[in-house]
Image 1: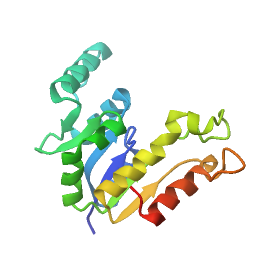
Image 2: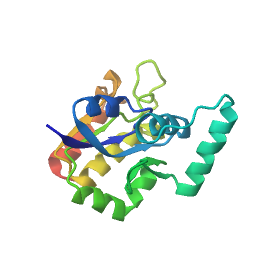
Image 3: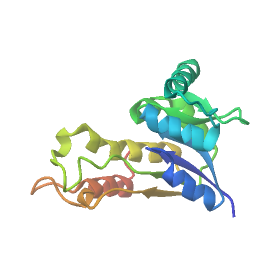
Image 4: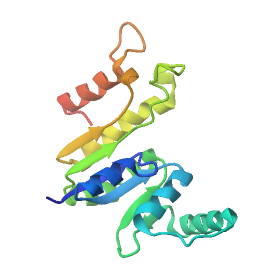
Length: 181
């Protein structure tokens, strides 16, 4: 049974690979890192010619990003399939979000960066900007209204940063339950 999905914080495409194997069709992937975006693009959208000199590949990729304003299409598609940019900038594009909502995506998946939540890290709390990316994920969900969401993170997202507050995941769940945008 085919379904559609969007992959946020897509990295090199682990979620996309699994969902494609389960008959999913990606509507869009969003990744901030140009290096991970290049891998995603090569693996899923349009394979680069093999070059012996990695500088040629990097130059080609940088030209492609510049020419496409960080919005890349699949080889056989007129639709943007990969955005290599900050998720907060994507959230500013109300036309894009409305277009995605109109496509009625089945699933939005994502693994917001976990370093700020990890028990192996410094756990700086709300002062760590990476920790706010779970809220960018939430805002994308609210704006696009998928049928289902899947968010992957580390155990530390379930732990409070201080005695009086909620854990980061409790905050996200509270926003969904109360219907806040």
